[in-house]
Length: 337
Image (tube, rainbow, N blue to C red; front, side, top):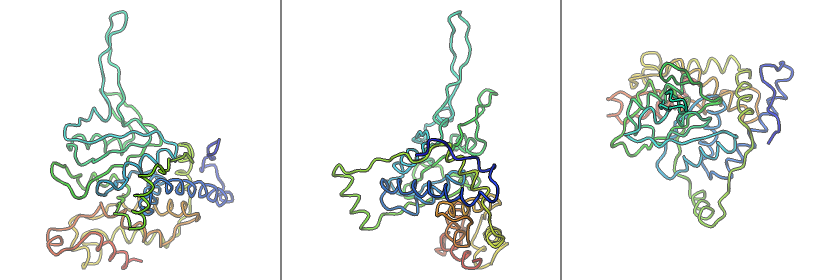
Protein backbone atom coordinates (compact mmCIF):
# COMPACT_ATOMS: atom_id res chain seq x y z
CA UNK A 1 0.00 0.00 0.00
CA UNK A 2 1.32 3.46 -0.90
CA UNK A 3 2.50 5.74 1.90
CA UNK A 4 1.18 8.87 0.14
CA UNK A 5 -1.93 9.39 -1.94
CA UNK A 6 -1.62 9.90 -5.65
CA UNK A 7 -1.42 13.48 -6.91
CA UNK A 8 -4.67 15.25 -7.68
CA UNK A 9 -5.65 14.33 -11.22
CA UNK A 10 -6.76 17.91 -11.91
CA UNK A 11 -3.11 19.04 -11.68
CA UNK A 12 -2.00 16.71 -14.48
CA UNK A 13 -1.03 17.85 -17.95
CA UNK A 14 -2.04 15.86 -20.99
CA UNK A 15 1.56 14.63 -21.25
CA UNK A 16 1.43 13.17 -17.73
CA UNK A 17 -1.97 11.56 -18.10
CA UNK A 18 -0.81 8.32 -19.72
CA UNK A 19 1.79 7.50 -17.08
CA UNK A 20 -0.63 8.41 -14.32
CA UNK A 21 -3.32 6.14 -15.77
CA UNK A 22 -0.80 3.30 -15.86
CA UNK A 23 0.11 3.88 -12.22
CA UNK A 24 -3.49 4.02 -11.02
CA UNK A 25 -4.47 1.05 -13.19
CA UNK A 26 -1.74 -1.03 -11.57
CA UNK A 27 -3.17 -0.20 -8.14
CA UNK A 28 -6.67 -1.19 -9.13
CA UNK A 29 -5.55 -4.38 -10.79
CA UNK A 30 -3.87 -5.24 -7.48
CA UNK A 31 -7.05 -4.31 -5.60
CA UNK A 32 -9.18 -6.52 -7.82
CA UNK A 33 -6.75 -9.40 -7.31
CA UNK A 34 -6.90 -8.89 -3.54
CA UNK A 35 -10.71 -9.06 -3.62
CA UNK A 36 -10.52 -12.18 -5.77
CA UNK A 37 -8.48 -13.96 -3.10
CA UNK A 38 -11.45 -13.69 -0.73
CA UNK A 39 -14.47 -13.69 -3.05
CA UNK A 40 -14.45 -16.86 -5.17
CA UNK A 41 -15.99 -16.58 -8.61
CA UNK A 42 -18.26 -13.57 -9.12
CA UNK A 43 -15.56 -11.92 -11.24
CA UNK A 44 -18.11 -9.89 -13.16
CA UNK A 45 -19.87 -8.75 -10.01
CA UNK A 46 -16.56 -7.76 -8.41
CA UNK A 47 -15.48 -5.79 -11.48
CA UNK A 48 -18.83 -4.02 -11.80
CA UNK A 49 -18.79 -3.08 -8.11
CA UNK A 50 -15.26 -1.71 -8.41
CA UNK A 51 -16.32 0.21 -11.52
CA UNK A 52 -19.21 1.71 -9.55
CA UNK A 53 -16.95 2.85 -6.71
CA UNK A 54 -14.34 4.20 -9.10
CA UNK A 55 -17.09 6.12 -10.89
CA UNK A 56 -18.09 7.71 -7.58
CA UNK A 57 -21.51 6.04 -7.47
CA UNK A 58 -23.67 3.63 -5.51
CA UNK A 59 -24.61 0.06 -6.45
CA UNK A 60 -27.57 -2.22 -5.90
CA UNK A 61 -26.40 -5.81 -5.33
CA UNK A 62 -29.06 -8.35 -6.29
CA UNK A 63 -28.77 -12.04 -5.48
CA UNK A 64 -30.25 -14.81 -3.39
CA UNK A 65 -28.96 -15.33 0.18
CA UNK A 66 -25.58 -16.99 0.60
CA UNK A 67 -23.78 -15.53 -2.43
CA UNK A 68 -21.28 -13.45 -0.41
CA UNK A 69 -22.89 -10.04 -0.84
CA UNK A 70 -22.09 -9.03 2.73
CA UNK A 71 -18.59 -10.45 2.49
CA UNK A 72 -17.99 -8.60 -0.77
CA UNK A 73 -18.84 -5.26 0.82
CA UNK A 74 -16.67 -5.97 3.87
CA UNK A 75 -13.78 -7.10 1.67
CA UNK A 76 -14.01 -4.00 -0.51
CA UNK A 77 -13.90 -1.80 2.57
CA UNK A 78 -10.69 -3.46 3.77
CA UNK A 79 -8.99 -3.57 0.36
CA UNK A 80 -9.82 0.06 -0.45
CA UNK A 81 -9.04 1.32 3.05
CA UNK A 82 -12.53 2.67 3.73
CA UNK A 83 -14.42 3.05 6.99
CA UNK A 84 -17.52 0.89 6.74
CA UNK A 85 -20.75 0.13 8.51
CA UNK A 86 -23.81 -2.04 7.92
CA UNK A 87 -27.52 -1.43 8.41
CA UNK A 88 -29.96 -4.32 8.42
CA UNK A 89 -33.16 -2.87 6.97
CA UNK A 90 -36.35 -4.01 8.68
CA UNK A 91 -39.96 -2.77 8.58
CA UNK A 92 -39.58 -1.01 11.96
CA UNK A 93 -36.38 0.83 11.01
CA UNK A 94 -36.77 4.61 11.38
CA UNK A 95 -34.96 7.40 9.48
CA UNK A 96 -33.23 8.41 12.72
CA UNK A 97 -31.75 4.90 12.92
CA UNK A 98 -29.87 5.73 9.72
CA UNK A 99 -29.00 9.41 9.85
CA UNK A 100 -28.87 9.91 13.63
CA UNK A 101 -30.85 12.06 16.05
CA UNK A 102 -30.60 14.81 18.64
CA UNK A 103 -30.54 14.04 22.34
CA UNK A 104 -31.03 16.37 25.25
CA UNK A 105 -28.00 16.77 27.52
CA UNK A 106 -27.65 18.59 30.80
CA UNK A 107 -24.38 20.35 31.49
CA UNK A 108 -22.74 20.63 34.90
CA UNK A 109 -24.22 24.11 35.40
CA UNK A 110 -27.73 22.77 34.85
CA UNK A 111 -28.15 24.11 31.34
CA UNK A 112 -29.71 21.83 28.81
CA UNK A 113 -28.87 21.62 25.14
CA UNK A 114 -29.31 19.27 22.22
CA UNK A 115 -26.43 17.24 20.84
CA UNK A 116 -26.54 15.45 17.50
CA UNK A 117 -25.48 11.81 17.59
CA UNK A 118 -24.46 10.65 14.13
CA UNK A 119 -26.03 7.52 12.71
CA UNK A 120 -24.35 4.73 10.74
CA UNK A 121 -24.74 6.66 7.48
CA UNK A 122 -21.70 8.68 8.55
CA UNK A 123 -19.17 6.31 7.05
CA UNK A 124 -17.31 5.90 3.78
CA UNK A 125 -18.77 2.56 2.69
CA UNK A 126 -22.27 1.71 3.87
CA UNK A 127 -23.96 -1.64 3.33
CA UNK A 128 -27.74 -1.24 3.25
CA UNK A 129 -28.78 -4.85 3.66
CA UNK A 130 -32.18 -5.75 2.17
CA UNK A 131 -33.06 -2.12 1.55
CA UNK A 132 -36.51 -3.04 0.26
CA UNK A 133 -37.61 -4.31 3.69
CA UNK A 134 -37.75 -0.82 5.18
CA UNK A 135 -40.66 1.59 4.77
CA UNK A 136 -40.61 4.16 1.94
CA UNK A 137 -40.00 6.92 4.48
CA UNK A 138 -36.86 5.22 5.76
CA UNK A 139 -35.69 4.36 2.25
CA UNK A 140 -36.08 8.00 1.27
CA UNK A 141 -33.90 9.16 4.17
CA UNK A 142 -31.02 7.05 2.87
CA UNK A 143 -31.61 7.86 -0.80
CA UNK A 144 -31.60 11.59 -0.03
CA UNK A 145 -28.25 11.22 1.69
CA UNK A 146 -26.96 9.27 -1.32
CA UNK A 147 -27.96 12.07 -3.66
CA UNK A 148 -27.04 15.13 -1.61
CA UNK A 149 -24.09 13.77 0.44
CA UNK A 150 -25.37 15.45 3.58
CA UNK A 151 -28.22 15.18 6.07
CA UNK A 152 -30.22 17.93 7.73
CA UNK A 153 -31.45 17.58 11.31
CA UNK A 154 -33.32 20.37 13.09
CA UNK A 155 -32.19 22.84 10.43
CA UNK A 156 -28.50 21.96 10.79
CA UNK A 157 -26.57 20.48 7.88
CA UNK A 158 -24.13 17.65 8.50
CA UNK A 159 -21.87 16.65 5.62
CA UNK A 160 -21.14 12.98 5.03
CA UNK A 161 -17.55 11.70 4.79
CA UNK A 162 -15.83 11.64 1.42
CA UNK A 163 -15.74 9.31 -0.30
CA UNK A 164 -19.24 8.11 0.52
CA UNK A 165 -20.69 5.04 -1.18
CA UNK A 166 -23.75 2.89 -0.56
CA UNK A 167 -23.87 -0.75 -1.60
CA UNK A 168 -27.45 -1.86 -1.06
CA UNK A 169 -28.69 -5.43 -1.36
CA UNK A 170 -31.96 -6.96 -2.47
CA UNK A 171 -33.21 -10.53 -2.37
CA UNK A 172 -34.88 -11.20 -5.77
CA UNK A 173 -36.90 -14.24 -4.69
CA UNK A 174 -38.65 -13.19 -1.48
CA UNK A 175 -40.96 -10.20 -1.77
CA UNK A 176 -43.47 -10.74 1.04
CA UNK A 177 -43.36 -7.81 3.43
CA UNK A 178 -41.12 -5.70 1.21
CA UNK A 179 -41.40 -2.17 -0.16
CA UNK A 180 -39.90 -2.18 -3.66
CA UNK A 181 -37.95 0.94 -4.55
CA UNK A 182 -39.76 3.22 -7.02
CA UNK A 183 -38.10 3.74 -10.40
CA UNK A 184 -37.20 7.34 -9.57
CA UNK A 185 -35.32 6.16 -6.48
CA UNK A 186 -33.67 3.24 -8.25
CA UNK A 187 -32.19 5.83 -10.60
CA UNK A 188 -29.99 7.01 -7.71
CA UNK A 189 -27.96 3.81 -8.08
CA UNK A 190 -25.31 4.03 -10.75
CA UNK A 191 -25.45 0.30 -11.43
CA UNK A 192 -27.35 -2.87 -10.58
CA UNK A 193 -24.89 -5.68 -9.92
CA UNK A 194 -26.38 -9.15 -10.27
CA UNK A 195 -24.72 -11.95 -8.30
CA UNK A 196 -25.55 -15.34 -9.84
CA UNK A 197 -24.99 -18.84 -8.47
CA UNK A 198 -21.34 -19.99 -8.78
CA UNK A 199 -20.29 -22.57 -11.33
CA UNK A 200 -19.44 -26.09 -10.17
CA UNK A 201 -15.68 -25.59 -9.95
CA UNK A 202 -16.06 -22.40 -7.95
CA UNK A 203 -18.59 -23.96 -5.60
CA UNK A 204 -16.23 -26.89 -4.98
CA UNK A 205 -13.51 -24.41 -4.02
CA UNK A 206 -15.93 -22.62 -1.70
CA UNK A 207 -16.86 -25.88 0.01
CA UNK A 208 -13.23 -26.84 0.61
CA UNK A 209 -11.62 -23.52 1.55
CA UNK A 210 -14.38 -22.09 3.72
CA UNK A 211 -14.77 -25.20 5.88
CA UNK A 212 -11.16 -26.25 6.44
CA UNK A 213 -9.54 -23.24 8.09
CA UNK A 214 -7.99 -22.10 4.79
CA UNK A 215 -10.27 -19.08 4.43
CA UNK A 216 -8.36 -16.07 3.12
CA UNK A 217 -8.53 -12.72 4.91
CA UNK A 218 -8.70 -9.45 3.00
CA UNK A 219 -5.63 -7.21 2.99
CA UNK A 220 -5.53 -3.43 2.43
CA UNK A 221 -4.20 -2.29 -0.94
CA UNK A 222 -5.41 1.32 -1.24
CA UNK A 223 -6.49 4.14 1.01
CA UNK A 224 -9.49 6.42 0.85
CA UNK A 225 -7.30 9.21 -0.55
CA UNK A 226 -6.22 6.94 -3.40
CA UNK A 227 -9.86 6.25 -4.26
CA UNK A 228 -10.71 9.96 -4.32
CA UNK A 229 -7.70 10.70 -6.56
CA UNK A 230 -8.61 7.83 -8.90
CA UNK A 231 -12.20 9.11 -9.13
CA UNK A 232 -10.87 12.50 -10.20
CA UNK A 233 -8.67 10.82 -12.79
CA UNK A 234 -11.65 8.95 -14.26
CA UNK A 235 -13.28 12.28 -15.08
CA UNK A 236 -10.10 13.42 -16.86
CA UNK A 237 -9.79 10.37 -19.09
CA UNK A 238 -10.40 11.02 -22.79
CA UNK A 239 -13.43 9.52 -24.46
CA UNK A 240 -13.88 9.30 -28.22
CA UNK A 241 -16.78 10.79 -30.14
CA UNK A 242 -17.75 7.32 -31.35
CA UNK A 243 -18.19 6.13 -27.78
CA UNK A 244 -20.09 9.28 -26.79
CA UNK A 245 -22.41 8.83 -29.77
CA UNK A 246 -23.01 5.19 -28.83
CA UNK A 247 -23.88 6.09 -25.23
CA UNK A 248 -26.22 8.88 -26.34
CA UNK A 249 -27.93 6.72 -28.96
CA UNK A 250 -28.29 3.78 -26.58
CA UNK A 251 -29.74 5.89 -23.77
CA UNK A 252 -32.22 7.65 -26.02
CA UNK A 253 -33.21 4.37 -27.66
CA UNK A 254 -34.14 2.96 -24.24
CA UNK A 255 -37.19 5.24 -23.93
CA UNK A 256 -40.76 4.62 -25.00
CA UNK A 257 -41.43 6.17 -28.39
CA UNK A 258 -37.81 7.17 -29.11
CA UNK A 259 -36.13 3.93 -30.20
CA UNK A 260 -37.07 0.99 -32.38
CA UNK A 261 -40.70 0.12 -31.89
CA UNK A 262 -39.98 -3.60 -31.68
CA UNK A 263 -38.20 -2.88 -28.38
CA UNK A 264 -39.57 0.35 -26.94
CA UNK A 265 -43.25 -0.61 -27.27
CA UNK A 266 -42.57 -3.03 -24.42
CA UNK A 267 -41.23 -0.28 -22.15
CA UNK A 268 -43.45 1.52 -19.65
CA UNK A 269 -40.54 3.60 -18.34
CA UNK A 270 -37.21 4.42 -19.93
CA UNK A 271 -33.73 5.66 -19.12
CA UNK A 272 -33.27 9.34 -18.28
CA UNK A 273 -30.20 11.53 -18.77
CA UNK A 274 -28.70 10.21 -15.50
CA UNK A 275 -28.31 6.82 -17.20
CA UNK A 276 -26.12 8.39 -19.86
CA UNK A 277 -24.06 10.18 -17.23
CA UNK A 278 -23.61 6.91 -15.35
CA UNK A 279 -22.52 5.10 -18.50
CA UNK A 280 -20.06 7.85 -19.42
CA UNK A 281 -18.33 7.49 -16.06
CA UNK A 282 -18.58 3.70 -15.90
CA UNK A 283 -16.95 3.05 -19.28
CA UNK A 284 -14.02 5.26 -18.29
CA UNK A 285 -13.67 3.44 -14.96
CA UNK A 286 -13.80 0.03 -16.65
CA UNK A 287 -11.08 1.07 -19.07
CA UNK A 288 -8.91 2.30 -16.18
CA UNK A 289 -9.35 -0.91 -14.19
CA UNK A 290 -8.26 -2.87 -17.25
CA UNK A 291 -5.23 -0.63 -17.80
CA UNK A 292 -6.49 1.28 -20.85
CA UNK A 293 -6.29 5.03 -21.39
CA UNK A 294 -9.68 5.44 -23.06
CA UNK A 295 -12.94 3.44 -23.20
CA UNK A 296 -14.15 1.57 -26.25
CA UNK A 297 -17.45 0.44 -27.70
CA UNK A 298 -16.84 -2.92 -26.01
CA UNK A 299 -17.04 -1.13 -22.64
CA UNK A 300 -20.39 0.36 -23.62
CA UNK A 301 -21.71 -3.07 -24.60
CA UNK A 302 -20.41 -4.68 -21.39
CA UNK A 303 -21.92 -2.08 -19.07
CA UNK A 304 -25.19 -1.35 -20.84
CA UNK A 305 -27.10 -4.01 -18.91
CA UNK A 306 -25.99 -3.18 -15.33
CA UNK A 307 -26.39 0.57 -15.94
CA UNK A 308 -29.78 0.40 -17.68
CA UNK A 309 -31.44 -2.64 -16.10
CA UNK A 310 -32.88 -1.00 -13.00
CA UNK A 311 -33.86 2.12 -14.94
CA UNK A 312 -36.30 0.39 -17.31
CA UNK A 313 -39.76 -0.99 -16.58
CA UNK A 314 -41.81 -3.37 -18.70
CA UNK A 315 -45.42 -2.82 -19.66
CA UNK A 316 -48.02 -5.26 -18.42
CA UNK A 317 -48.37 -6.63 -21.94
CA UNK A 318 -44.63 -7.23 -22.16
CA UNK A 319 -44.63 -9.21 -18.91
CA UNK A 320 -47.62 -11.21 -20.13
CA UNK A 321 -45.71 -12.03 -23.33
CA UNK A 322 -42.71 -13.25 -21.34
CA UNK A 323 -40.41 -10.38 -22.31
CA UNK A 324 -37.49 -9.56 -20.02
CA UNK A 325 -35.45 -6.43 -19.44
CA UNK A 326 -32.24 -8.39 -20.09
CA UNK A 327 -33.43 -9.48 -23.52
CA UNK A 328 -34.61 -6.00 -24.49
CA UNK A 329 -31.30 -4.40 -23.48
CA UNK A 330 -29.44 -7.04 -25.47
CA UNK A 331 -31.55 -6.14 -28.53
CA UNK A 332 -30.87 -2.45 -28.01
CA UNK A 333 -27.13 -3.10 -27.81
CA UNK A 334 -27.27 -5.12 -31.03
CA UNK A 335 -29.09 -2.27 -32.79
CA UNK A 336 -26.80 0.49 -31.58
CA UNK A 337 -23.41 -1.25 -31.53
